Image (cartoon, rainbow, N blue to C red; front, side):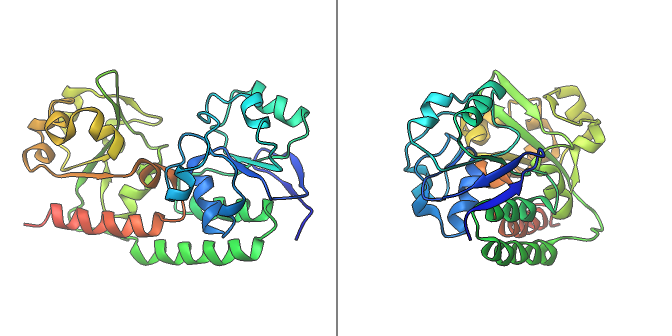
Length: 278
């Protein structure tokens, strides 16, 4: 029911009077809006919105880390939904000064994170009951597919790649860290002591010998597919490389902690088991 007033993730009190012109400034947040049945009210998205296809087809206002108030204001939004990734801060301040309700929702990388995001988006859009149903379904799915303990857990290295110029091992703060553990693996970041992420280091990677490589689709494509991936950081010489044990998934699905996370966890659990079976 509208209007609604919420205290957002960064402590701002925001009043939303209408949700007929929604702009999610994050791909996964857009996915949540569509999952809540309000996709028809979305007038634009940022470049990271690739799912569902209806969101991908909408006009784009740029990338969430490099927004401009002018491009967003041109769509006359009635509510803006973002995570703390959105910026620069000056553009967000300009939007607030112009009177556009801007709600920052949580984006925690944890088993609890996806449901918290759903509940926050639903509350801001005046549909908390729908949000609760969706959040509970997701929590149930995550709990059902989570591996409590594994006899011989595989070492999984999670990578973020953009060609030769950007090649990182994702760390303990990443969206994939808890997914790897919940699916029954050991995150290579733990063995390498990586928190936020670190450049690929061939010597360090060879020393831990990962069993599985986890990489977003766009990153895999950017290095020329699996063949090119084997040339990154000596991966071709690791158990994962020698067995071509590579898992790739859509970027938004793998890194977004969104409504499909339960299904993703089930896929990863099965893939870990199959790739490490005797």
